[in-house]
Image (cartoon, rainbow, N blue to C red; front, side, top):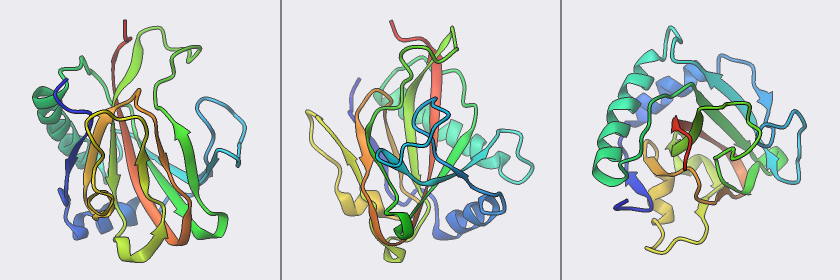
Length: 191
């Protein structure tokens, strides 16, 4: 592993982000759950979610683009055995509910019902112009090699990659709404 995190600042244009977000927002949102739970836990996570599958008639190209970028990033920095991407999750963090997701990691180590796969490489795409919201910063915990610049993370169209077992959070949004898209690239279970 050559990096704890990799950021492609402004990788997607504002127009690209707006087009993707407009299509995603055609779906009705659902309340976010914590992990694999069927229950909402507003003490841990307050956001609305929309999911996109790889066969989505209007957004299939996002999957293709992300796979190419992920393979490049993984080859250069991680070398993880990743073999699938099952969907994209768009999170809506709004000031009306102080939208946030407290400290967590993205791997379901036990009891996820999947005998073969673990999430290995997490990806966050910043869809919203940072002038449209306050708060809502992405935050890492317990890194050894330094932390990314928060303003760079907030840049619209930026793509952040990191190992799925790293702890991170989305801090509360205090004004406006922040939209981000998450992808989890999976592979054979960690050993």
